[in-house]
Length: 192
Image 1 (cartoon, rainbow, N blue to C red):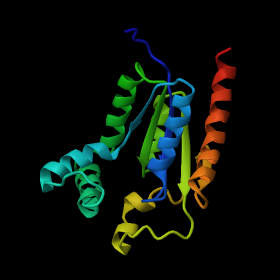
Image 2: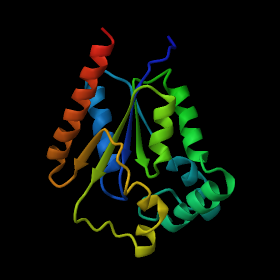
Image 3: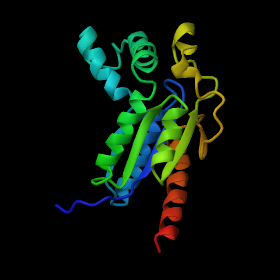
Image 4: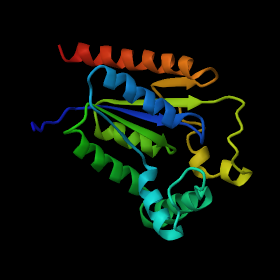
């Protein structure tokens, strides 16, 4: 096995709950894998999900997700009382490791400005994508909708791309494909 730094393209997908972040990240990976590239998905939430499983005996399923516990654990406990940059420091370290094995890294759950800005400060090839699903009720309570993890990016304006998720999955995939193709062309031009 040859180990070297692939200098991966890092796609950070941002948006509110249930707007299609995981779907878009999955499409990015699928399109890139069709081109023979090695991909991996990371999530800021993977750390708190592991804590929540141990704290609440949660089985990890989406159907029984303790969203309120996850929000409080991530923001009120970890970000406010332990380390504001806990998640972004960990994900940056994960990226450093995985960059030796993967060409494309997606992060499918960015919810805070620092979760986009700090990776940009640390890595050369970061692409921030905002996904919005207009007029969609994601089923969250008003308290959950007003939580900082749902509101922090509302006034963020440093995205490379914005996707309006208002059509079919095929239409969404075409929008994603256009972004991936454009980024691949940029990469090819800089590596000639």
